[in-house]
Image (cartoon, rainbow, N blue to C red; front, side, top):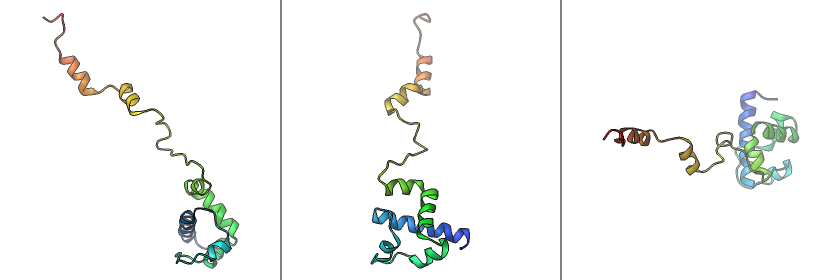
Length: 111
């Protein structure tokens, strides 16, 4: 087993390669990639001990990549609460300039 930093870099590299291929690859499929991948399957096996353990780390550490590999819709935690449209957002929060303009308008009582 390698150091945590080396494993993190290897997990990210393997996840990106699998994402480029569009599926979770087996070790045999990973070995059959013709282009240079930046990391060899032997190095991954040395770091993780088994291919299934590497896949488990990808699933745990990169859930967004995992969801894309399985065709699921990845939930965006930043925009998860923004289910309404821009018009609804504008009506929900009053514009401060518009409120200032209304306040500065002469009222019927002032005349």
